[in-house]
Image (cartoon, rainbow, N blue to C red):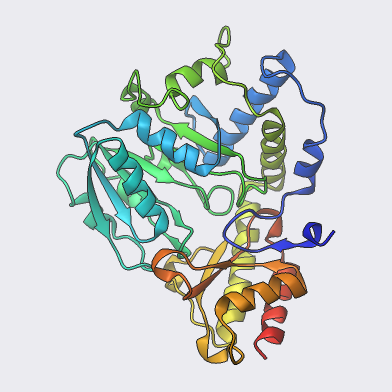
Length: 364
């Protein structure tokens, strides 16, 4: 089938690792089966290794990355509290929305899209916020934001980080950087289809979680009684068994390769793609010092588009003729940029060579 041959090089799902595909074929166990709970415990251990944390409350939320975001905010934020949010793309905007829906007083710190956030501006935005929230790897622009600079000077505030696009692709060090709660997704650098949101919560954040958050489904106190291995497991919800299988396998691939090696592979492919685009006269959105290797955002080369052809037409040709899927711009960059992913199993030099050659032909 043509769909099975597509190379996903957009900002969304990456091609899954072969080991992940095999994991989906395993017989389904009950969500309270002892063998499954043992695998769930091992999955949480693997998540701690990839997040580089000792946080006991580290587990996959049953839902996509946005579910992880929702879980983070509803457990930590309530009416009247101040939340400072760094905004330099779509997903910073989304965190503002999530915090506002919890009744928070949202203090935005805006930077131009494509520009990294300045930590000092965020730290000076409010004298005593309850939470500081930042996107580590802004998927809408391909920009990396600094977490370490915030964590070292956050004071009493909790530092909340969106690591959806960063986990498994670039360095993430929750404990070293002072990140109190982080959420991610499975579908990007972990090479697993979408469906789970890895979350990790520091002991400091656990102490400040609401005992009865606005959401029953995302109540981390209740979920902890199910996912934590000590004592009897409390039934909270039916876990998506096959997705846990897949995440366990995907994390195994990353850890078997080695975190440093996986990061280096993503960096090599990102450098190769970005150098190839610039050599062809493309203008990249993010500055060189803050570019993500796993997601490259490039301005649409309007002058090079064939007559009567729009940027979406080029993306459609890439998909239909070459089986290559790249993403368009979002929000303020809609119709103005392309977002090319090199994530997870997709981060291979041969894929970079193919996408550059395809662009050469389409834009010839």
